[in-house]
Amino acid sequence: MTTPITIGVSACLLGERVRYDGGHKHDRYLTCTLGKFFRFLPVCPEAGCGLPTPREPMRLVEEGGRVRLVTVRTRIDHTERMRRWCAEKVAELAAEDLCGFIFKKGSPSSGLFGVKVYRPGMKAKRGRGLFAEAVTARFPLLPVEEEERLRDPQLRESFIVRVLAYRRWKELVAGGTTPARLAAFHTAHRLLLMAHSPEQCRELGRLVAGANGVPPEGLFARYEALFMKALTRRATVRKHTRVLQQLAGCLGKRLTPEERVEVAWVIEEYHDRLVPLVVPVTLLRHYARKCGEEQLLGQVYLTPIPTELMLRNCV
Picture 1 (tube, one colour):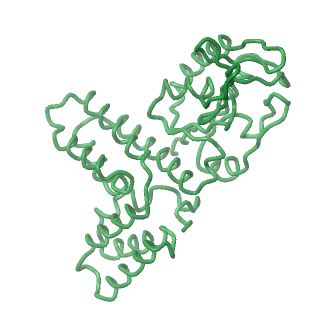
Picture 2: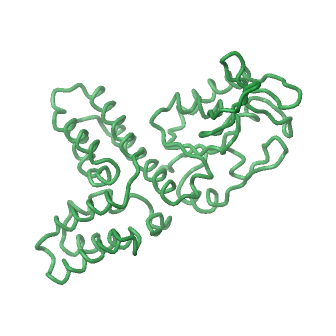
Picture 3: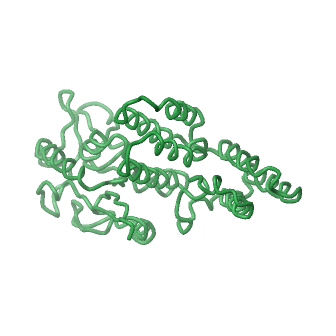
């Protein structure tokens, strides 16, 4: 049985009543859709550090150049209490084999982007929640996102692609850090990397080509950092089109003239945003199977995510 892929999630998003007002922010996309494919690890920093539910709301305030976590009305400072808990929690999470984390937008503890940091007599600036800051500092390569941004189809696909890629990387390392295994991993991910960052794909290729004689620890650490960084780059229609054309070129004369015309036409339809990415990818995967192109079928690009999530179905 395959070990489930673990993603940390702000507990309120899973329907747990842990918010300051005693309520929750249940996100049904997470529980009803992503929950079929991932194991969720709920975390609520406020409840975790011992604060009651319900409780007085808190916010981030900059004082003397330091960001503090204080209650809105009574001005009670919970900064050190929260930071101590965060340090303990991220140490625990290191044993959980996390492959991603979904945070609650705007939370002074868990907000990932644009959390308001109030400054006396000045306009509020944007910052990051204390727990989200601790997680990203401890796990800099971990795929992270906020629940509201997952409503954007491209951001949603990007996050899940990174989660699954990170899981495959972990499995690679667990199976042995040899240059041959790294080369096979890179070959399987080459087209996916090209769709995100052609430049870093080439840099990774050069790293793999010069792998012999390089200590495995340094080689794999360098590859991992570049690999995850490349996948954070946005995969655009233009880059996808180039990858699709490469795939079509690899099939080459194995296709009939009519099939080559069909493939070229569907790729052009995608380029002009008339059909979603799933259409040319499905067609190319079909012809790769028909032609017995096992090397192409081994490309993660053709099946990077569960088809049931329909992440490539948006134009």
